[in-house]
Image (tube, rainbow, N blue to C red; front, top):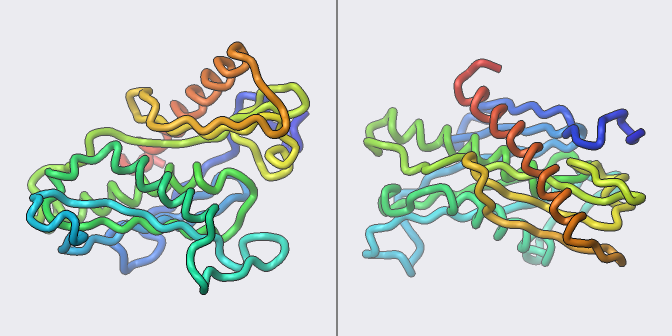
Length: 238
């Protein structure tokens, strides 16, 4: 029995609240169990210098865990982004650039900001899943305003963790499970079931090809469920 009573192949309850703050073009609060992340998408009518004149847009991301997000206070990144945050924000940026046509976006930049206000495992995967909704809302606003005539978003994207804990494959690890995992893996996939990225690590352990395939299948099931929920959120049916 898992600590929260879930089946091995069940993800934590998920809830996405749109328009969570008013100023960004898109803003959501995503809750995956006890993990809570504010994801915003802000549009700037300019591109980085390396893209000037390229007739292409850009999308980039920043990620941070706020001081009250963990049991002991986490210091603010006043001296620059730490290595873990830098790795995660690059992952978020790559994941969202994989599903948007930057040429069709035009010469503008979309900033994705993911701020963890409560952490209980899976903050990077929740950030990606929530950021997709914020991005979609931002693009819809640009279309409503007549800035864009069609959406540059090609497909959806969602992410989830899987792992092996005490010899058992589990979906969507909470912090306690993650801290005990022999194998920890993050999967990012499109709505069509294509992989964007697979991050898998043996934590002082190794894993077999068979175990890898089991984890991939488990993650695919979880992402299919998250994708269906994203579709319902954007359709306004949940």
